[in-house]
Each structure stands twice: as C-alpha cells, then as structure tokens.
Image 1 (spheres, rainbow, N blue to C red):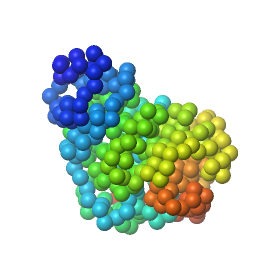
Image 2: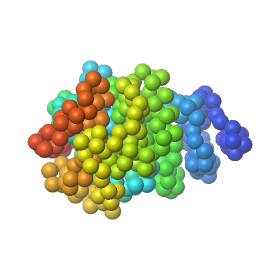
Image 3: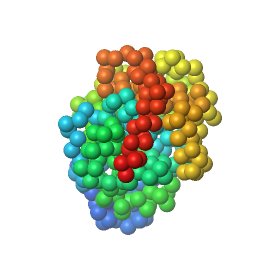
Length: 330
C-alpha cells in the first residue's frame, strides 16, 4: 500500500490490474485504517480514471455473492449518493413506481453514509428483512415486481472498509461503485451520478459492457433527475439534456424536495408520497425518475408515454400495492 500511496501522491494513476489488486487487498483487511483512509481520500482530490473505476468494479463483482435473475427483464434505479443535497428517497420511491407498472426491479442499496437516510434505512424501518437468499428474492420479484439487494450482504468483503467510510462521513469512490456492482446484474440500469465527469465515465463503462442504460445528472449537483433545472442524460439510446418541461412539469424549488432530518421523518415523507399524499413537487420528481427508468427499458417509447405510465402507477396506488405486498411477504 505504501508504494501505491506514493504513486498516487505523485499524481500518477493506477492501471486496471493495479486497481483490481489494491481493492481486493483493501477488502480482505490487508491494510490498516490509516492506509485505507489515505487511499480513500486521495480520490477526493482528483477524479478516478476509467481504468481505475473498471478495476475497482471488477474486483467488487469478483468478490460478491451473485444472484441469478437472468430469466427476468430487470432494472436497477440506483444513485451514487454523495451529492450532499439530502433529498428524500427519490430513487427508492421511483423503484416502487416502476414495479407498480408491472416491470421487474432489482433495487441495490445500502445504509446512508453522508445523508440522513439511505434506501436500506427506510426499508428496514418498514420491516423489510435483508437477505441474500436467492429463493426469497426471486419470489419477491415474481410476486411484487421488486426486491431489495442490501449491499453488505452481497459484498461481505466490504466489512473491513465500512467503518472507515463511516468515520470519514464523506463521499468516496465507493459511492461511485454502488450502481456498478449490483449482484443481480440487471438487464437495464438507470444510474444517477453527482458530477458530469462521473457521468461520462459511467456512460463509457456501460457502453463497454453493452448494458441498456441511462446515466442522469442534474447540472446543479443532484445524483438524480431533480427537475430543479437541466438534467444531463447519457444513455444507450442517445445523449441529451432535459428540462423540467420535457416531462411536462414546471421547475421545482430545491427546498421542496428536501428529505427528513432522521430516519423517522424520512419514512413519513416516503409513505406520504406512496399514499398519494405527497406535494406536487415531490410527485413530479419521483415520476420523472420513474419515467426515465421506463424509457431505459423501452427506448422506443416516448418520454410522454413513460411519464403517463409512471403517473398512473402512483395515482392508482399500484406503487403502494407493490410496496405493501413486499413488506407483507417478510
């Protein structure tokens, strides 16, 4: 690790093979906490290269516990986190909206590191039991349209890194890895990222893996479609910018999509929206993200068609039904 740190401090980058090796050593506990913290913070001072991110991703997948969903046409809606915006659980709510349309969702997530409530926090609050049991998860997808893949259960090697990430309390390159290492290998991927540079790298990697995808980044810093302004989309079906009006919505104020201060208040917001009691701004944001996920699965469909499907899922309580079925199966 000393030699690797010296190399990075000299502003040199790692090859894909070196990145794979160093992450494998990190997750196997071969380095002390000071070395791990130093390694993680280097990437707050400079961007990852494509080779570095690819090496880290491949190492994570090599070490993970895989789950086979190849007989389903699945999608994951997952953001990198780390945007410091503290929004409510937009991608998780959008996942249930997509499940409510009849699609199959493999939601990959974790506890929050840098915000008040991550996807794992909110689902655990409502009684969802995390599992890496393939039969349980496949049954959930078949019966409800969605299951949740709690990252630590599928990436056991992360246990050595988790305490350091928690102590740092800032986004690290592990935030960047989340949407890239879904152990269920979904057929389609909608990934939200916190910067235009990360968007470019993600798009390149997804293209290289020949995965049907959409990478979204709101230009004012959100790792999702915030409809607070312009959103950059880099997808297997084209690269472009979207305005709030592209979804048929007016621009919303950032204050209107803030999340709760803790898990309790975040869960209340979550359930209000699912029950159809959310504000107009909250509804617009989750519908916009669900619509882009549907567009990812069906590139030939118009965005207007996808918005209509997402709106119907929320308004007709189909998203809520998917959620209730999932929780009742626990």
